[in-house]
Image (cartoon, rainbow, N blue to C red; front, side):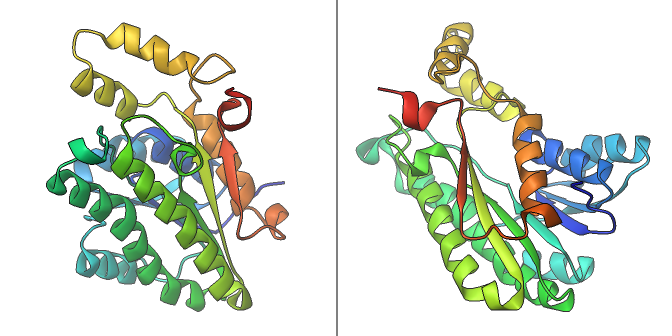
Length: 254
């Protein structure tokens, strides 16, 4: 079950965190993994880990916010079977404390970046007679998260894009779903805490961990396992859905 043998997979932001966990698991399950990250160096550790385990992987330096770069990269990769839209950035701020520069930066990566990859991937899916897309959304698209105005806005757009793509391409054998994690312990989170809560790292880590009713943050491998199921043939009846994986955050936080 859950074999991805010979499935050509693109993972954006595959150099660390959730993207790295997905890339390595998919390679273990037989996929040919193509990692897109901002630099070749940022993807190298993931690439090395996959190859050391006997997997098949390639990496590309690409800014997902630049459509010309994205289209050229996807054309280089060619026909694909799976796309994981995982690349993203965060920002702290309410609407009146979010600068236009920061808002545009988040939209460029988290919204336009997803659009660019979808735009470039659809012709490559057609060459494979269909495939599967996973867009990484967030619980921030479901509930109000304090001081996350731009990020929440972007992830709401990602969820809406998921429904639109699922509807538009269902007749072309392209499935599209999204995953909405709560807080997941990654280098991204550690860097975020360090940057925004200097001197209070341990306190903030504990506070963020306890915000999930289950009492901890998620693990990248747990997100990867859900992505594996949704991209497998066993999930062939699933499209146009969002999957919270949140330690009870949405339903149990009263």
